[in-house]
Length: 263
Image (cartoon, rainbow, N blue to C red; front, side, top):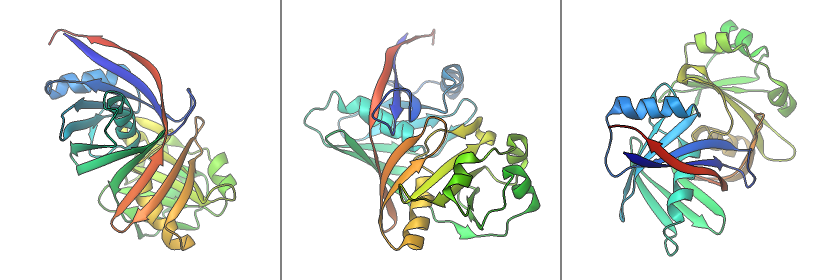
């Protein structure tokens, strides 16, 4: 069986930046263990598997170790691939574990329509301080996904952060978003997800489902510019729309090929 595969750098307009995602085009679902094996073989933070359809495409996301219920950059990458064959279409709908998700395009910009995931204040622990090697000004938790949000005093603290990844993995949380207000954009962030097999995720659309509502409230504005300041880096333009978050970015091709497996 020959299966088309693409690799796309998302949330960037130049190669070798943003977050790379694999996009695998299927005409039917393979067994879950095969999907997981492909994602592990790709060894990217996310592999998207999509069954295209003229009305609603079916979409799933896998890290090298688990299936996840929401992924922004791999959704952006998938839409980037599918839009190529849909010159007159400006919106693609996906059926996912997080419900119906739409991606629209305006020139080179693609916009994800994702659910807002609010965070609530929580006490920070000694374990979190030791894991991050910094004391946050505020800590919140996203109950739905068990992610912690550590708000730091300065954007330079986010940029220079060197967490102890073993301690991050040992926290009673599925991951940590670290963020701060910034001067060149509204806010910066980094995302650490070692329990998902991802030490640091380069650019994380799903994290902005939480970060955008938080910073919209803090800064008193609904349209925000953001930068994820990982080594690869990525740029996002976001807007809070009630219970939804619009997350916009660009994407560029890196490679296309075929998977050859006997299934």
